[in-house]
Length: 149
Image (cartoon, rainbow, N blue to C red; front, side, top):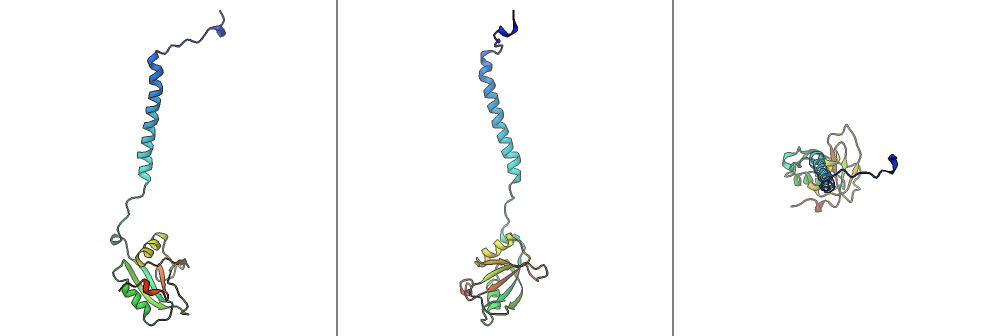
């Protein structure tokens, strides 16, 4: 008798033909659930804090359009927000039609907070590690839409 002519024997009982694929499917689903709840759920960011729990954002407010006392008026309008006005200034040339936030030392998360609190959407980055605040708000001729009386 030759070994190559002998047909293979099926030693598995008929119930095993059903239970093996079912067991593999159950293990696969269990693996997916463990991955999702163990690894992915642990990597999600914690719930964000409310603005009242975050530190105040430090800003310099600059009058960019030359209207008298505009920087102090704008600072007064921000007094109920989580913004600390470090100083008031005037730009060298009063040429700003639109208000703009200048990121000096801050990060993008604080910039997003500042945009939300002030309503000023325009921003630029001019980093300066020696600047007295994280951001500068240059108030332009469109200031009325950002000062709510």
